[in-house]
Amino acid sequence: MLAPAEFDALVDLIYEAAVVPEIWPEVLDRIAAATGSVGAIILAEGRHGPRWRATGALLTHLPEAIATGLMAVNPRPGRALALGHSGFVHDLDLFTHAEMDADPMYGFLRARGLGWCTGVAIPTVGEDAVIFSWERAFAAGPFTPETVRALDPLRAHLARAGLIAARLGLAQARSVVSALDLLGLPAAVLSPGNRVIAANGLFAGLVPSVAQDRSDRVHLTDPRADGLLVRALAAPVQAGDPNTVASIPIAARADRGAMIAHLVPVRGAARDVFAAAATILVVADLRQGRALPAELMQGLFDLTPAEARVARGLTNGHTVGTLADVHGVSSATIRTQLKAIFAKTGTARQADLVAMLTGAAIGRDPT
Image (cartoon, rainbow, N blue to C red; front, side, top):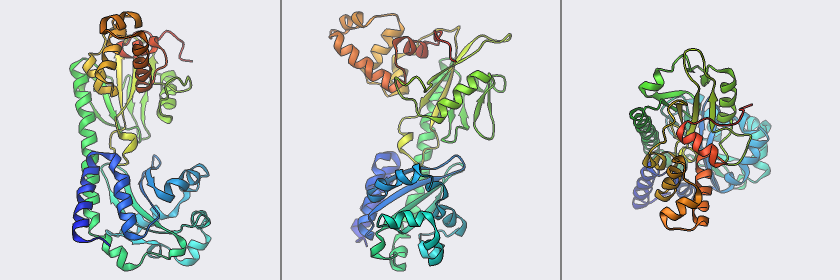
């Protein structure tokens, strides 16, 4: 296993991954190398479906298991959670040989030279539990009890890192909705399961007349808008794809004007299985017609300063040519920046971008 200095370095890396989710694969790979594993996975299991990151052989084969539905009936997570053991476990703690021989998921893994694992279940903020699991080649045999026990000291560090990651992400999202409150924009933070986990005072004022947080997900009371919301929450926003929705029109009623809801992904949430916050739902009154400040655009959509200036300029009515003259660059440079803005905001046309950033009319029937 790991020498004391290697263990200390690994613990440092685990806490670094809590802040920088892109480091988790390196954590997984270091433990894989120390345990003779050929791949690893972090799996967040919850009633809204799994979120995961994998390395090595599991990264190669798990997409197929997900596509064929095998991951949905994978018995390992359920058995591990039901066991309730506070440390690492391996297959023979969870199943008999006969059960493994008869299980489709084990059959899938063994057909690809895999089939032995060790892992640990970590409770997290909210409803999910996160499972760390390392996979060994079937020919290498099961993990020994000695190897499993040697991993137990890592459990507390993995649990703390997961808690830190979740709270940091939630704190970041809460700071955004607070800033939007100061700008007069109702906003709520949505969990990976699309439930409201934080909201500013203005958004609270829209509940329950405009939005409702129900047991399955957040809802819009306008049926047509809610149908678009379902589509938007079900599929990540892809720039230029007319079948996905980033901005959702909400029809006017006798007691209020028309509104528009925007879904803004929380930066890094898609890469972080510990993310407590996944999306920010912003609702704008179409009568306001106010453009967001460039600094807020930059923070919300991860724009560069130059991209934020271009976005702000477009909302103020400037053309690509005018912006090129103002900033002393070519029109081609502005178009390149505009293409990046489209990709980051989930829009495909200048009119859609301006509508989203100002709350102006969308200009097309949502149906």
